[in-house]
Length: 225
Image (cartoon, rainbow, N blue to C red; front, side, top):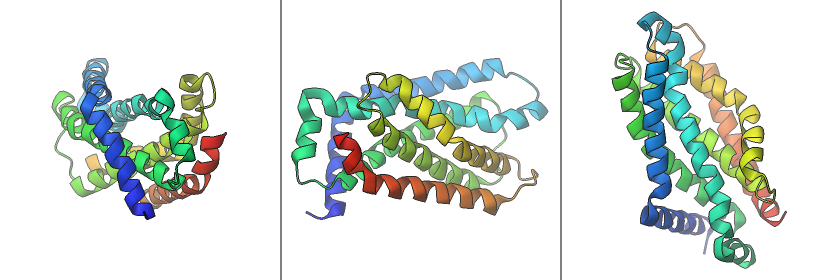
């Protein structure tokens, strides 16, 4: 079985487990919606001030909802010795990482499909003037954050304080990603904002490539630590 078939096998397995239970997906979606409502109440301010706050208000529920899924990655595999079975199987561990990345990414895309329209409804923002840039930013930003989250969740799996250790490692390493998605989101919502679009897009693409390729080679080692 080649690498791509193994990746699809892991993806299908994880999605089957998730859509059979639906608990994680429901938790992520409900959390994102409630957080959007909370932010709308907390930042009920004039439109000029909201232009500064809008990118963060849009992204915060998405990123925090994604965090709910990261700790479930390793916890699910530890149940009933599933992780041991994966370690002794002939499965390519890079395919295991990529399959889990894609599975988590699809869940985040579901959250985005619900949370972003809620953002425009609750915060009463005008329709994005650069929809293509906004979609590209959502895809690239989500990919980078999930790739880093899956990687670090596996790195922290041997610790007894995984839930505490993961955000401590994840958020500092995600600062370049956060800067890029906030700036690009601001440009998508308000094209009058003068910034270097190509520079930030290059940063996001480079970040995603880096933190997708490195775990592909290190995932085998991390699972055995």
